[in-house]
Image 1 (cartoon, rainbow, N blue to C red):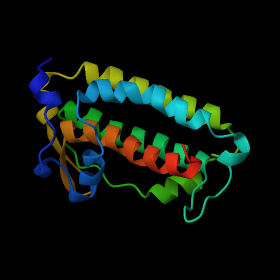
Image 2 (tube, rainbow, N blue to C red):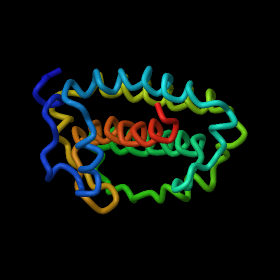
Image 3 (cartoon, rainbow, N blue to C red):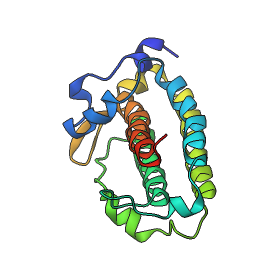
Image 4 (spheres, helix red, strand yellow):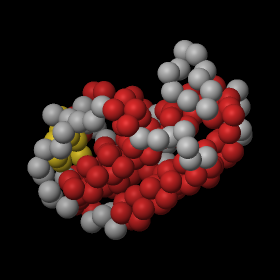
Length: 176
């Protein structure tokens, strides 16, 4: 794999402006290594929350910690589907998602927080395996998602940055 294609931080024109905030949250380094490191970080952060704490609302937030993990699962799947399709040169436009529809229509209360974190970790592990087998040229493939162009490289950074963004908020909520 060519290091220049996946190590290069996406240019602003590689994603919709909304996603630039997530890309900015990606620390310097190899995006593949960072994606892998997040697995243990997710486990460590959420291990600090009790099951009771995971079901509480912490104003001003409108989701419980379990719902936040559910949102991370949903987004991980959606972003990875986009990445997978565009890397394969399947350039059919992909519609956007309403995150609240997902949170409102899945049961994040019944499973334990640990089970939800396990599901998120399994999604990330599968996505890492996908990222490791991308051909160098695939990182530059560009498709349209939510009505805006985005590259495979930007989607990889969005996967990492989205988790980073939400982990910062969760740490504040848990005061860790």
